[in-house]
Length: 298
Image (cartoon, rainbow, N blue to C red; front, side, top):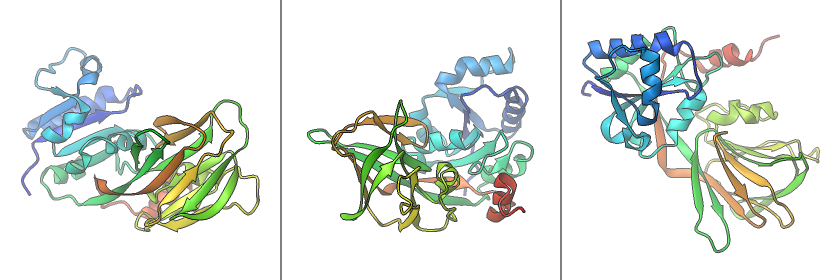
């Protein structure tokens, strides 16, 4: 594989003071390797402030949707949310993502802010392995309207906004009734997302290689409504009954869409949308569980 010489850097929207040192060090490191650097055009003023008058004339600025046309590698600097946000972008499957975790909890962003350069060197030379992760899609079907489709990496969540009140959902899998859920909502989680919101709601942990999807009720009003793991080949339908309003579908904790009575949310594994992450070969999945969540500690 040819050496990569065009790289986009995506920053966490929230201010992180460490960017003031880590980012200049990274860009200088890339420049020494003759790599063209791209930032989002919306971040130009922010970049100039971070560099405090230092030359930024060699930086390129581009709209997020155009990144895949210019670059073969994206570096995300933030946490899992920063990486997940870019993963839902247009034509992102054409680009490999190198996730640098700037915080403490990062689970999907596999490289730490202290020691990512060795991995990045290998990535630029085409010698670092990637792992392909298939995305899922949630489609809102509303009578008389064109369907709205969202891709997600972690989870799709249906909850009630405003005053916390129980509401009902009808759940089906491949046209067969699963159950009618009464509670605070439902989380539909991918294997990668099983360590996020679903885990906090008492859902199971799925290894990333498991071909499954998790249905996790949020505060169900029946003891028998437990989390359930289904094959990822299933097509899951969630129907909003009449008499319910102020209900929302949230995608990866970042996008929100208001649902109406009789809407149907259809969730299935995407056939065409996927992302390629660079894998940190020094990481072990179970060791990561122990480090991040104190998993198995007594």
